[in-house]
Amino acid sequence: MAASNIHFGATSEDWRAYTWSYEPDKTADWYGKHGKPLPELAPALTTVEQNKSYIVKLECVGCPFRVRREGELVETWQEPPQENSLLMNFTIDDSKANLLLNGDAIAPLAPMPLHITTYQTPANLTGEIMGKIESMKMLDESWAVGTKYGLFELQYEHTQLATEVPYQDWVQFDITTIHMRQTHNPGSYDLDKDGQKIVQLLVSREIVDSKPTLMIKDIQLLERKDRAQPVTMPCGKKAMIKTEFNPLQWDYYGKFGTTIRKVHVILWRTAEFFEENALPLIIVSLFLGGYSLGRWLYRRSRAQAVAQVKGDVEAARLAPPEYTDELQTEN
Image 1 (spheres, rainbow, N blue to C red):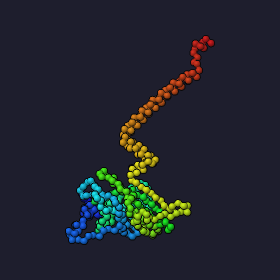
Image 2 (image 1 turned 60 degrees about the horizontal axis):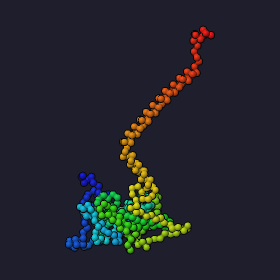
Image 3 (image 1 turned 90 degrees about the horizontal axis):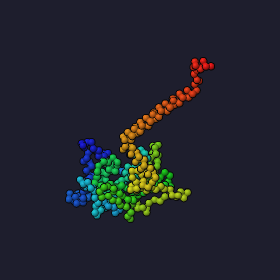
Image 4 (image 1 turned 30 degrees about the horizontal axis):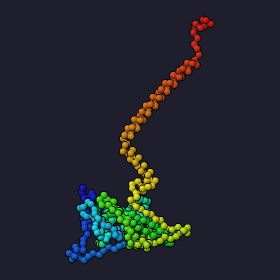
């Protein structure tokens, strides 16, 4: 296939522009050997656009590190694992007034199941590479290049809390477990170590140019014990909505153990049966239909014949007797 027919991403169709995403990172020894200073590391929070878009490099405390090497089909786990982080892009979608996380709506929260994935990078990711991740939109759904970074499914808790300020809410996103469900070397890890942080955003609903929009007023990385607490409503209930999602509890048909999933299984398997057996079912239906029509026509003709005979007999019974010349002579 010609290179011109391959789509790489939203910013460039030249494969050479993406080599940084799959070639090995330069080491400290490389910089020393070439007489270059060590590069600055990417911060934990990168501002893409003020109040609109941010990239979070969330430390994954104690997490195993997934290794993807150029030219190798099977990924492995690094032993011992280096310190690593998870990349999360929080962006306001002005067209729908939504807050997106790696392209998926989390405020308002999209219907379940909401599968969210994230890349794992070394904790010492450089500012230069982070700049390329941001400018070339690696965290956007348009990205179509395989990278050296492991891609994990997220198990998470999503909490939205009302504040005392009208039209302002806290959105808390807490990654509880990361999952790798590939055929080779799958694995999961719970993010339950001391010091593990969550992301907390203060989101404001405002009217800008006569259109409703969202703005990120604040974004914080903090430990679970330091998260904002919900206010109490006059009825005594907490003003919050909490949603938990575990991708291992869902499949194509729905969440395991629910009635709606059972209904979906029955409907889909019934549809698959008819789809796979469409031609035989049509032939059998035509045969049975023709057979039924033939029997109906046969019974109808028999009924008409019987009715005709009965009609003739009744007519004969009701007809007056015929008088012959012999009867007249005798009289």
